[in-house]
Length: 294
Image 1 (cartoon, rainbow, N blue to C red):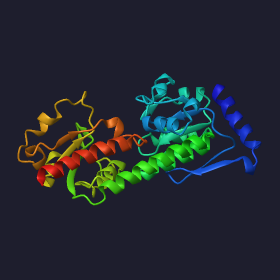
Image 2: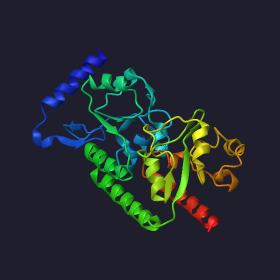
Image 3: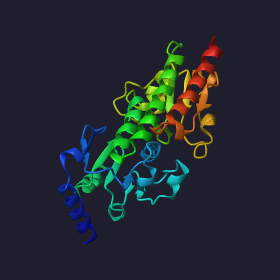
């Protein structure tokens, strides 16, 4: 009964909207998302989305998040609806959301479709280029009525991005293997936003040509590629022995020259304004590599 009443309420609200009142944006999946008024009750289905919503000035409208939505601090106090790949539909519906922001490549498609069946607007967030972080901020700001905050945050992000690009635009290329996970061994292809970070810093992702966004690979291709640098975003708490594991392969250039680097995954593996902090760290690491070989 509760779910049916919620469905009827959504239809009734839509019936009273006029064309001038409709808020409309195109999401990262190419879908047009329309609201009759700024969203007031938002459910976020990924940690990076939660962070984007707060950065866009809509944090006070977030009523549901998934596990590991831990930034900013206020996000920790919001009701959890499960994890990004296993969230509870009844819990979400009970929160009476008027907007769901989903992660296209990682949220279960069937679960999202069930939510859409209740006519709840869904915005898909899937930044692939660094500039997409800025456009996500602006579009989320429009949907939530916080455009002034969102547009300012977007402009700040673009200024910092431009400065970093200018700083590292002419540096010597360095081959990089980015290890996103260890068991199974996983990396990123050229379409992943982390690959854009590597490129900005003058790095060359040795697995950029793989067809899958975050592919599982075996050890042999890494040994064959023989990268100059190995970088991991594995949590140091989860995988403290990662350098020791790579030390078993002393002929690898990255191991032989001690070019094994760690970056906090929260600032490199989340599609948020903080990714520029991770970019600065990686760029400095690659600069040290160049300096050591000159």
